[in-house]
Image (tube, rainbow, N blue to C red; front, side, top):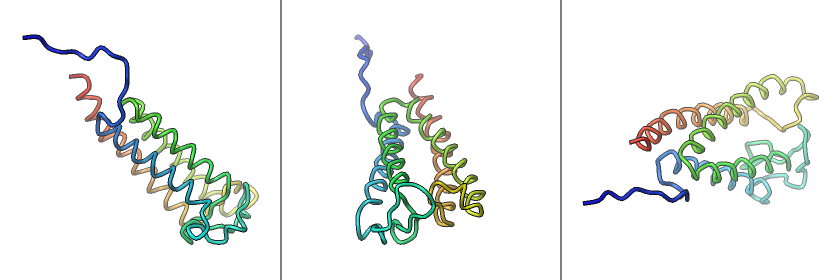
Length: 154
């Protein structure tokens, strides 16, 4: 009786739970980035600015967006999908991404009162969403990622 070992170096998407989570988060960010350019999903799209707090466009009528903001969501989505190729990459994407969103939440709190420093359109809904994303992504990366890397070692 022989035991088969995997010797190839290819990575398959969604082998572990953390890879699945990273893949889903990446796809959601891609969809959100695209939605920011879709009339109807984004109100006042004719007032969509490239960068800055002057953009009056609102994703789902709630979240203030700009072209730059939407592009960042698209890139963040691509990153989530690419990092989902490995368990370690997926875990790092979730944790580091969560830290980035925590920094954005803090920046949003400080920049909202100082409109000249607010180069990304933030409103109160954006700030709460950034906090939720930060906590959620870090928690998923730590909890789901720990189980996946432990299983991968066995």
